[in-house]
Amino acid sequence: MMTFRIFCSGNIAFKVFSSIHIVPVSSKSCLSRIGLERHCSVVGIFKKGIKCSYCHSVPVMAGDIPANISNGNAQHDPKRTFQVVVAATRDMGIGKDGKLPWKLPSDLKFFKEVTMNVSDPVKKNAVIMGRKTWESIPLQNRPLPGRLNVVLTRSGSFDIATAENVVICGSMNSALKLLAATPYCLSIEKVFVIGGGQVLRESLNAPECEAIHLTDIETKIECDTFISPIDFSVFQPWHSSFPLVENNIRYSLVTYVRVRHSATELHALHDGEKTDGKLYLNKFEVERFSFLPKMIHERHEEYVYLRLVQDVIANGAQKNDRTGTGTLSKFGCQMRFNLRRSFPLLTTKKVFWRGVVEELLWFISGSTNAKILQEKGVHIWDGHASREYLDSVGLSCREEGDLGPIYGFQWRHFGAEYTGMHADYTGKGFDQLLDVIDKIKNNPDDRRIILSAWNPSDLKKMALPPCHMFAQFYVDNGELSCQMYQRSADMGLGVPFNVASYSLLTCMIAQVCDLLPGDFIHVIGDAHVYRTHVRPLEEQLQKQPKPFPILKINPLKKEIDSFVASDFELVGYDPHYKIEMKMAI
Image 1 (cartoon, rainbow, N blue to C red):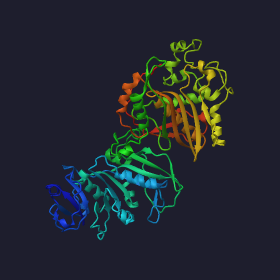
Image 2: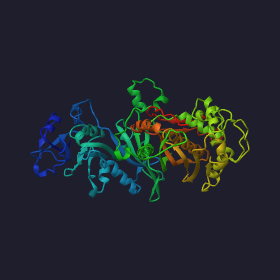
Image 3: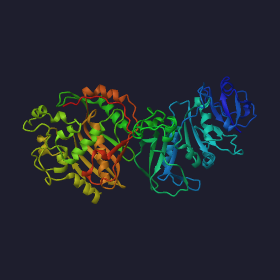
Image 4: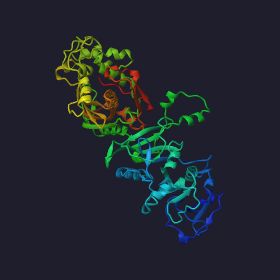
């Protein structure tokens, strides 16, 4: 038997719990009237039989909570969805000797922010925990303030008769059903499961779990309590902080969101019929992720790009340009992307991933022949390789398709004399790319790990001087990061490609050098939006981001020149539709 106290206006309680005996309770024991803005709101737990003119103690067996009421409408067995908040080591250890084996102030701050953040100021969130977790909270801190505390216990002797904002339930199932019914569906905004081990093992990959807010502890710490690993076929990263270090412990704050049913759930939904596994892993069954706390939702790294686009459109200087199209422009911008758990391929529009891969492999090969890309169905260089364009920039002697000593040539043959796209440049010039790899392997602290496409003596020979012209690599803690400088950045068409291309290059070099990917930092000189792109970009700005995909690279490839397009696989890329923008040439 459990009891809880509700404040009711009118006869709401009678309507909702008409099948349950309602026992009057005493006004002497009433807590302050909280939540008058709503029909009902939970204010505590009281024993059966105390009288009050406007409060009621409703005795309910844990398994008998009415399941046919949600938001006042009859439904079939509704249950609240929830999000998990947990700190765990890489092997999913969460505690030792009944305590947290770490002290991380930023983790505690993150926990408080996530579980207390509400968009509706008259509502609060609920936190569900086991009895041992409740008892582990210092007496002066319980119940956790500003939240409804739901304690799970089957102990008949467990009693919190004088605690405010506390509910006792016999199981997770009964708690979720209770929170789906009035008054909780009216007063509780989000539900968070916070521990302990048994509760988390039951909840982490449950169908009702929408998100997991994980403090991912990278430092090895001994634990004796463990939970199940996250099912990454179901959950994808939404946001990951850059690594933090406190008390000599390295960790990150990561949010994973459910994007699809598990294989078991999918099997049940389709009555055992087989489904296309690859298609399944690249199709989301969740289209919007507004269930996340606002502070978490807005941390998606795609917003870094979207906010910059919005800023350029709203505040950019009006400028003329060589194409005659006209731009809105800002000078001196930066974006930063975390490559550790996901890959920054934009989702608010579909990005031509195959084109990103083929172009980068083309650069790495040292080729300057646009026809090689054309033969693979990649036409991003067609405009600058056309007969008409080459003639217009004074390269009429150049064969159509010959772009001159652009990116790949400078990466692999810097300083060599360019004689045409068909020439053999083996052993000629300086191979910057191999030099970068050699320094990363043998002198990782070198501050001269540079890859440059900017060669002033060759600029007039190029169909288009390099836009992304300079990259520096940095090694720390077994991770490889890259900072790229781009003198001129077409925010609509070019930048989504550039971010993906240099992120991919960083991941490839990291694998070749037995490192892990770290950060990609994109520094932009002239960040501009062409006037013809304003409307398409305003359309894109209306889209809500989805989780970035996961990049998988063939682990057998250890030489930079050995990669082929089939060595790269994106898992979980389900973007919004393609948005057409015309390239300014």
